[in-house]
Amino acid sequence: DAGITQSPRYKITETGRQVTLMCHQTWSHSYMFWYRQDLGHGLRLIYYSAAADITDKGEVPDGYVVSRSKTENFPLTLESATRSQTSVYFCASGDRRQETQYFGPGTRLLVL
Amino acid sequence: GQQLNQSPQSMFIQEGEDVSMNCTSSSIFNTWLWYKQDPGEGPVLLIALYKAGELTSNGRLTAQFGITRKDSFLNISASIPSDVGIYFCAGRPKSFGNEKLTFGTGTRLTIIP
Image (cartoon, rainbow over all chains, first blue to last red):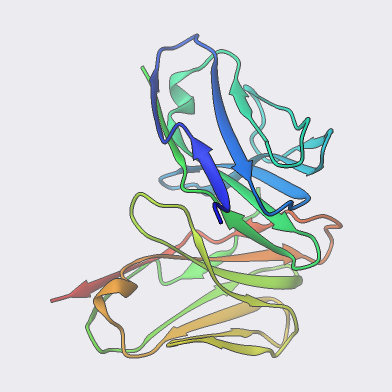
């Protein structure tokens, strides 16, 4: 029972490069979310998805792109990475009926 | 964006002590969740609360959904070393029709040897 996984766990990239962070869940949850966690800001929602092919912006969407062609996958792309996007990124999934969210282990991204 | 007021921000306690923390909001919430995050890991769900006044336990942890729907409390009894970490509250505002959660800023728990 893998639950929710993220890859890579660590990533170092350079300013201007495109980076894609992967998220995969095995629960068939309808909802999936991307958060970033920074000191002093807590968890901030970047994008979320209510179902395959349905996505919506969260609190801090600028500079990010998401897609959800399959229920189980929800990749997050930084189209042109900036230093301000250095952060820890968490993916989460949720079952609407249970009204809860379960988090992945996170991806630590450093943009040089 | 809105954040919940979580207090205290940090706690330094001795092993065996009881711990109390709380979360308050200016808005009414339908759901309250409590998470724990260990260093280098993602938040792990501890307790979920769905009704005002609800009191739910998970081992040594007990959480309550405030009667006003604007607050929640988490208590840890007889703390042990593995309780160290950051505890987050999260709530789903009544006004939202989706699953978006609002998170607290966290309470960092440290156990003094």
